[in-house]
Amino acid sequence: MPEFNLSEYKDKETNTKRKVFIEYLFLKYGISSDVDKFDNEYFACLNDEDLIQSLEYYISRNKVTGQVTARNYITYIEQFFKTLSDEYGIRNEIFTNIDLKNEFIIKEKGVYRVEVYKNQNAWIFSNHIRLGL
Image 1 (cartoon, helix red, strand yellow):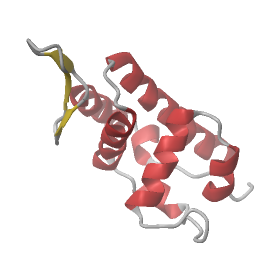
Image 2 (tube, rainbow, N blue to C red):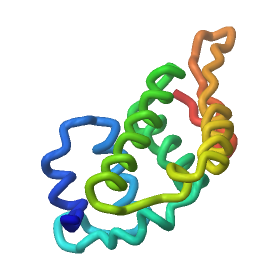
Image 3 (cartoon, rainbow, N blue to C red):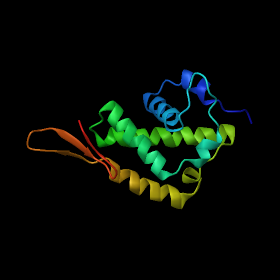
Image 4 (tube, one colour):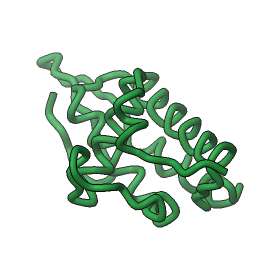
């Protein structure tokens, strides 16, 4: 199988959601995408909390107020991990173990719930933080 290079992939990626996920990964691990090589073993180490944090990062960075938009982010991340698995042999248990995936989906759904207050300001409530939009 060919070796996966996240820095090269980042430069070719056109999907905004996956680009934000890649940006989150470089920030999380303190790696400069221009200088350092991203260790592919990090993909296997990501847990559900890391993925939830990436969703929160996406929501905050893009000022997301729609549940469908947030859910689409997760769908694109799932597709990204499927590509890693199918084409490069890089696996993460969350996406290969049905029980772990179901647990993640339950947690992920709790992250984005949009409520509008009397002043019509949208707020996204997260299990971890509350972001004012």
